[in-house]
Image 1 (cartoon, rainbow over the protein chains, first blue to last red):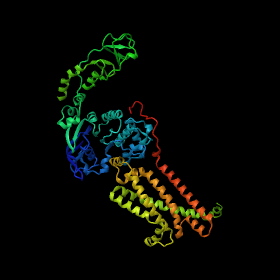
Image 2: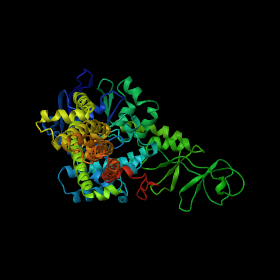
Image 3: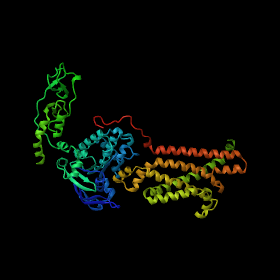
Image 4: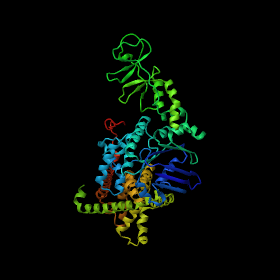
Length: 359
Length: 224
């Protein structure tokens, strides 16, 4: 648990980067600091491992005042990941990852064994162990950065815009990977980003900072999207927040409708659209009414799929909107077609889902 | 060539002296330049002070230094120490700037991440900043070593100039072969030392030549 109590950072030139911050980052959870540049989110993060010293207030990590600790010792117990990973260019991947265990005085051999284990954990091929950072792609370097931060198994992980320098596709896979890792490791993570979408995707709780270093709102992502406290948060959370808020409402109450289904070689439907299934019942795409049999050429790509049981209202609505027929394809856990979902059905289910989440 | 073969004993002795007189100052200069370069890179006043002092020292004429050093450092006028101290001053003047530049070129975010991982300043300097600055330092070291090998010859005016003695003697005794042989040997020595430094630099920085992989190889099944 990380606790800020009245923490202020005033720089020698008089600028106040962080103004009287009160905030608790729960143990085992991801807390995201988000805000425009100059809002003090990075300064707040860097006070946790004393890269920046608070001017006033008290900051505790697991009950211990950070100012009472030896800075180097404190930092070895807190993982740190930054943009472009900050890897050491002159050390191999395995030695980069082994850095903190080596600083802690563990043997080189044990440290390297542990490093190779961690490469597996973060999804890197162990054959890369002997390479240098410059030989890796940006996404791979970022994985090494995460492995390096985890090497000494610290309870706390600080991540300062770690994924902002990689392209959107890689960023998304790194985010998914982080959530997967977190579900196994349960670290106390403080994550800084300027990207509100990243914040609501990763955060168990999100702290929105405003310029001048004041905390504007600190809530669960769903609450942030549905009930911003003021105009600043409303504007910052951005357009489509109503639509994105659907991502935090569960969709169990949507009734599934029927669906016309055909297989390859069957005659095309007489009117409307039909879903084409493969041999195992999974959807291949859509076909429109016409004459002749269903062939590869007549199949139109389908929209997004809506997984029954694990989906959100947003996923269900998107499946309906992105389908050529206006019927979203609902699939079961094995990916087999379970029925259809329409935009009307999603909207009809909305009031109940809202009541559920408010309760 | 003939002359060299007939006087091989003398040539070998002078070459040895030349190497000691020129390379010992390079070593001493480097050892002193590293902490001073660190200071220059760490504090803005340190940078102003050390770099200005280095610039001033470098403009002193070498001949004047050989003559004025003895009363300052308390040596006799004919003492090889004068040459060594004078050249150390030159090498130091050159290398302080090199070391400071090399250290300031280490990316801020790398130094920052080292600090955040729990390196204390001295260990961070030795294990992270200095190794990353090696390519720049080696480049400066090559200039310093070659300058030093060439400057030693001036020491022959006070009797300790290594192969430079072959210029003065050849001139006085009117043996042009000796003068020419001296010049060629000094050049050869400079080339060999330079080549060795390049090689040492390469061995010290294997990461500089690490190539980009032709294709990323993520674990099968794992998305990149």
